[in-house]
Length: 181
Length: 435
Image 1 (cartoon, rainbow over the protein chains, first blue to last red):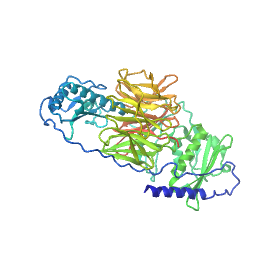
Image 2 (cartoon, rainbow over the protein chains, first blue to last red):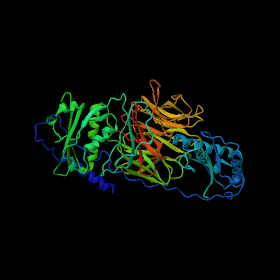
Image 3 (cartoon, rainbow over the protein chains, first blue to last red):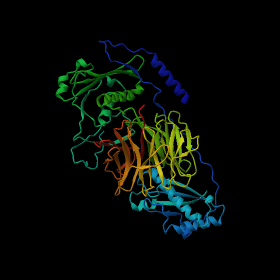
Image 4 (spheres, helix red, strand yellow):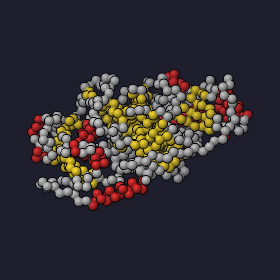
């Protein structure tokens, strides 16, 4: 399809070059130029790209969902522009680290998130730093680093759609996701 | 069709002029223009008489309305009273220059179109200086009917450049992301929002689109594989190359001025750091600095000798500058606790960025010679500012009426516009290069 279009554009350009400029009927104009717009200079066609395909993941053991206590929590929350795991988050990190320590085949991804304010790229880095902070707590609490992947979504995947602190505070978080669950 | 009235009164204490733009039935504008505000106090607008072109009503796309809309949107020109001029002059000799002098116009734009034997459209236009009666510009352009808009933009560029001494950007393109429900789309459109096309559609986020300096490629960050990767896409073929797919985050691409290298942010070593890679993604990345802080949002200076970036090495995000070979970084921002998203003007003399002030995130402009700061907006949630390739306009993302919108402000702060998509949020704009 693209080759045919390219052929048409080239043919049009060649045809344009071969036609002679029209002569002015009135008195000669000293500054006239006849300008042919180059048809291939700026692409008029911009095809849509084909999607990338992710490899399949194998499932890992994971704590039963809906249970109470720290192991039933899957999210840790943060203050604005902070990546410090606070007192509410530490037991959650430790509980999952304990699970990982007891299940060598268990693998998790820590997904870092931010609220909507400020730069997307700085928030991507901040989300990553939040997730790395949780990983640090986990690796000193029984998990091994090979069991933990870190990813950041920055502010791109907010859970709450509001534009106030009640939504923002819920979006500033790291989610603990077991592989393949 | 009238525009929606801006919801708020202008905050300018000076006299401001709100202009409602029109578009006619045959326009297929991809975006809705929400508002255009021009502060006229102290602004020297060039009074111009832009007349319709003879015979253009025979065409599928009349030319002069596009030229006039392009020039008026800059806020630099004031259209003289041209209605009722009959017959339409097409030659300088037909102009009654005394009348235009009386209407205070300093120049008159006239033209005519005709359909050639081979179906192409010949457009002839003349720009006449009223005081000297000299023809400042005469040109004849011949285009197929499908390229009439492009021809009109070229005429607007020529008139703009002749009258201001600056390059016009009417023939350039812009890119942006639209999120509509679950779908994310990276789109490219003409600078006036026509001819929009989607170059990537995804169920996962896309951020940070950046035009290569020659306009042939787009670098961007895609989450298609559930984690951020940097991709370079060839715009005329749609072919893509993943140029950064290391452990962790791969993001914040920025082109070197020669288009051969990219600065990127990689968190492969546990924290966001800046590296440079070749644009094909073949070499090992070269780390620019080693810090224990977040270093990101690198941009090259126009001379290619420095990299500006955002870092929280001082405890909060600020903007720094480092030589491209690495070495000691120099801090550039000192006001407030959150300064991010640096971009330089094409001449390298001005820095635009986002500053948090209280609860608001706003576009700020800093003169790098004097370090004077200018607040460029009064919005609440601004992001991703960048300059037009002639340095006159700043394009950025903002929010209005509960949606993500795009906004423009002139570098002197006088001309402000907002655009919206018909549906969904629009954000992450990037202005394409002059070609």
